[in-house]
Each structure stands twice: as C-alpha cells, then as structure tokens.
Image (cartoon, rainbow, N blue to C red):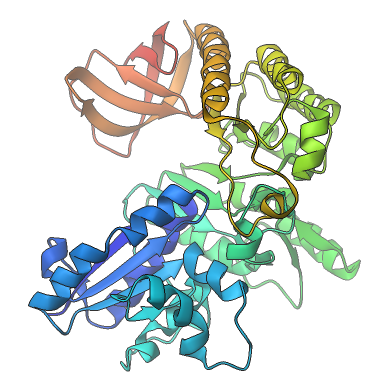
Length: 464
C-alpha cells in the first residue's frame, strides 16, 4: 500500500487545508505513513507570514535527499503560501503550467518534484498521472479528512482584499474568493449531524464573506430564514456574514460556532447582535488591533482609526455580557516611535483584552511595506516593547478572569491531563481554558458544567 505524509506550517487555515490534502491523497489510494521515513509521497503545506517558516522549509533538504536516495520513487510536493507567492512574483503567463510554478523554487529546493498552489490541490492526481473515482471541481468541494471527531474547521473564503502594508497574504492567497452559502451550510449541517461539538469558520478575513443568492435555495433551513434570504435575493442583495452566522446557528444540535480571523472594518452592529442573540455562537471575538496609534495604523493601511476600534469594542461589551475579546498587535513596525508605542500600551490597559498575540515586526519580501518603508526599529527595542505589552496583557487577563470566579460555565472537554497536572482541560464559550481538578478523566469532546473556583493569568480553575 502506498503511503503519504503531510507537514503543515502556519495557522488554522493551513491545518484545515491539510485536511483536504489528506483527502486527496487517500482518494489516490495512499494511506498515512507511520513515520516520515516510510512515506512515498510527501506534501509540504507552507506558510509565508514570517521568514522563519520559509527557512524551516528550505532546511528540509538534507532529509529529503536521504529519503530519495533510499527510495528513488519518492515524490515531494510543495503547496501553500510559498507556491502562490512565487507564482505572483515574476512568472510569465505564457509559460507552461508546471514551469511557471517550479522554476524559482526548484532552484532553491532541487529535491522538489512538483509545486502546486493550494487552491489547485484537487488537481494533484492528474499532476501525478493517476486516475481517481471522485473528481472535485475545485478546492472547496474536496471533502476533508477531519483530524478530530469533535472539533472541525470549515473554510468559507480564501484570500484578502485589504492589502495591509505589512502582510503577504494578498500576494500568497490572492483576492478574496467566497464559498457559496449552500456549500458552507451543508458541510456544517453534516458535521453537526455527525456529532461535532465545535465548528470554526475560517478565512483570512472571515467576516467579509458575502454570497449572491441565485435560484432557489435547496438547503433545509427554517422557513422564516428562507423567507428572509428570498427577500434579499429578490432585492438583488448579497447575504453577508451576519446572515450566514444566523442561518448556521439555527441548525438543530448541541454545538458551538466560532470564527476567525476577522477584520475590525467588517465588524458591524448586526453581526454583534447575532452573536449576542444566538446561544450556540461562542462569546469570543478575535479582531486584530495591530496598533493603538492612528499614525501607525495609517502606515499599515488598516482602514480604521483607534476611536472607531474603541467604539466597536464598547458596543460589543455592552451587547454581549462577559464576552472575551482577543486581538493581534505588531510591535516595532516601520518608524514606530516611543510615543506611538505608548499609545498602544495605554489603549491595551484601557481595553483589557483577554489575549493579545504579540509579534515583533519582521519585514517580508513582496509586501507593500518592504517597498516603501524601512525596517528601522532595532531588535532589542522590539523585544523590550513586546515584554512591556506582555505585562499589560497579563494584568488585564487576570482581572477579566477574576470576574468569572463563582460562575457556572459550560465547557468543552478537549484534553485529559496536561504535563504533570492532575485533572482535565476544558474550554469555555469565551475560549478560556479551565483546569477541572476534582476529576481525573472525562470523555473527550463532551460538554460539562464547571464551577469556577479561581483564576490565573491564562487559565481558570474549576470543579465539575
């Protein structure tokens, strides 16, 4: 039996992509390899957000040269962001399909056999000269091989139209492409019917999703929702992300609905209202601030001001009790002064985020910033700013978590024991981990009710 192995770099979107890659591999008759050395087909799903991720891929050469030496029939496929980025940088449309993808990358990685952008992963069988029974029409119609029996990621769009100056995504993933409402609804409903407890909608800019309704809906949604959508169709309006979330939340079943990653520009009152109204939509919203300085936001091309961001946070907290708000921030972006960084610190002290994913700015070749701005903040200054922001984060998180002491919360069990700790780990609707100390094991993927007894910086302590 032929075997395959997939190496995945990057975010949840990439891991979701790899579930579709696995499905394509198995449609060709391959089975998962027990270890890398025994695989005959290797797929590397790459990330280009940071240079380190690409360096790790380039550093895999020695391993693959050895594999190919022991088995000359071994094939290595590269997909993901690195493939799309190099496609968009300097190839002529007149070149053949294979050449335009492989010329530059194969000069860097001579152990590669093929390079295939992720949106074309359904074409892998024909690339290898194999015939399969199923023939998906595009990337989205590949039925994934889910890695979990209770948590699932469902991509609803790919690409981004925002063109933030620091970001490589528009050049690696391309413009926004939206999956149809019916495709999304059917995948989510099938997951719920199969017993999945937590479903996360994915997109580089997930909440910019929209879909034009053409023809009659053939999905089994409630009549009142179908009537609302029909009215939009007659008015030639698009369904937006709030419509999608509301429709998915009406699916009968015991499950939570999450989404990531959203852009502040596309957070609107209607979406906030839907999240507040529907009990099975998780009460956690992640949207990236990136900086607390208007001048830095302008250099980043972020499409909003600090005041507009604050107004949205205020509305969210007013509308959704006990909501958790998480964000991303880049420290040391091109030209960031001490005063501009202090603005970020003060804003984070005020807003008290439940998590901040802090990145030190790293210039990426091919971004707008790399062409027009100088990466002029010393590494030690970036590290110092990250440390200061981390202290502000910890203070805010501890205060937020303390407010949950004494509450009874529903939580999803996802891990029995962690390191040497006695107990189990579950996660609340707010995305917060709870260490449950009065039991040693529970079925993974089941909901439990937890009394919150104590709070740490990034963990709640509770009892079943």
